[in-house]
Image 1 (tube, rainbow, N blue to C red):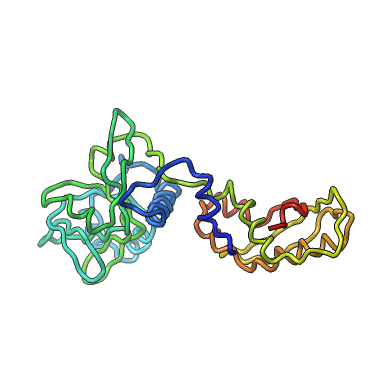
Image 2 (cartoon, rainbow, N blue to C red; image 1 turned 45 degrees about the vertical axis):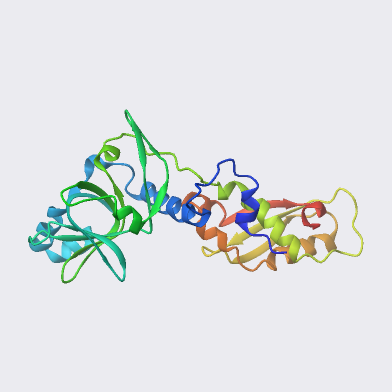
Length: 276
């Protein structure tokens, strides 16, 4: 039986998923929200009017390419909500020289609850259902990964926020979020146990300390013994079990701070950790 991170963490989560949205959707949304908070932050007071993008591009195309290749926060008034083979998108300032197309991220927060300076996410919706909530003339705020220029101006992979949410001072807590980093070592032990070859005999009280290096994509790069258990056969079997994991794809779902933490770390293993 292969242990997945979702299976392991499902037993630890204390929040119930919304009935209409699966855990994978929540995972994608929360990952995108973390990306926002780690780059631009919750700073809607610094939002740039989408009209300014066109002005910057008309003034200096090279500079605009550099400025808008990074994540940014924008605001604009919707002219039309449309669909094509790439999904739903919002047209801003249609028919004007400042027109822009806002392409939506796959999942969006909706509905919201606001109270004073705080906001609360009550659910999420796929981008098509989300886009159906808005009409022409509504002002919205967008956090987008980048802006591209071609036949028009295209804001890519955008999270969309109504003004009442953008007016709040504090970022919302992400619901249905499981702390991947907190359970990562337990998942590693579970995976290692699948490929462990138990030595012929084991002494009691054994514990080996290992230094593990992982690549950014979760590939196990190296495993070395930093403190022997005193039983060479057990030490070697523990090293082999970890190397047999191959790749921990779940590392790509982690917050950047957790990824950095697990690029190189130490972990202790006992025989009990490896017995299925």
